[in-house]
Length: 285
Image 1 (tube, rainbow, N blue to C red):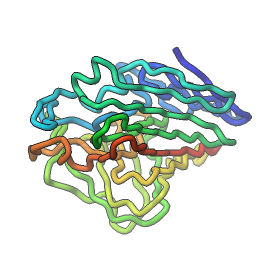
Image 2: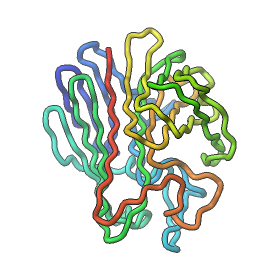
Image 3: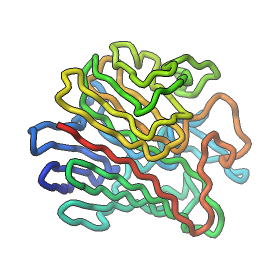
């Protein structure tokens, strides 16, 4: 089932399956900002990545001496969430542990995601609640796909010097090699071949915002990355969308860790504490 919120400017739809955005529609300009999905290219639209981002080595991890299996990007994107609250311009969904999740992720948790409209802005708040008496380890990421064309630009609000980590295309794991993306510049042009070797994985970003600017200048998405330590930028090669992905976590490299708590960029949440992550998109016609 899909639930909708709207105001004078926007109408936004979210599916119960995965708590996934399925529409960000401009009522002013009759324009759909969000990629509408195409199974022949990529079926997703805006999956929520929890409790891992990317892929684990052999899809497995060790926690306190016990081995668990976890699918790529975790399980939150595949499960049905419950509608927690709904108003005209705001709605919240919740996902909690179950018998099935405890078999692959042995923590009790609440993950609450709230979608809120304010004029031409969409704010998405992710709240992770640790319901355990011990600290909890997790990763969390967003993955919204916005419609775009080859030749459109992604522009940071400051000049950046950034390299991307390379990815093994067969196993989806990070390699030690990197290559330069920006040298004291702020604009990435979306080309036909930019994603031939999978996502750009960027970190140590100074900017608060990254802006998707259409080459005809008609539509713009100003995206607040929420202070995330990593940013993924991805699409299927030559596809008419781009994913802007703020991550509190990252996929594994080939270096095996002794415990899940040692995973690169893992988040540690003390017992009975709350972690919040917010991204925001200003949709400019």
